[in-house]
Length: 158
Image (tube, rainbow, N blue to C red):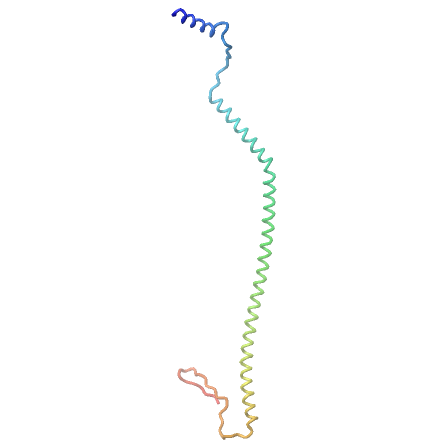
């Protein structure tokens, strides 16, 4: 059987290098760095195409949204400034009301004091007129006691 084995080997050798040999393609050798560079260029081109497609689809909507947002911001800023002016005028009106109220309260207090003084005088004169016949020869009217500037001293007024 050694003859059969050697004949088989010769047969295979002829198939590989003989007339029945498979076709061979001859190519030039390209370094791996060029393949890597070509791959990077293809990735960059694909990314640029994707970005341009994204902008074409959604870029105009984003620009419209941005424009609408800026217009809305400007409108709100105008509204805020108008409200600030309005609150400024309202605050000044409130301050004017408060000062007018304080002046009115001051006038009211002085008028109440004058009113009480006038009532006391009216009561005094009414008693004088009504008591035409005095019962006692001595009478004390309108007694007032007020503290003096010195401590423990008082002024009396009859």
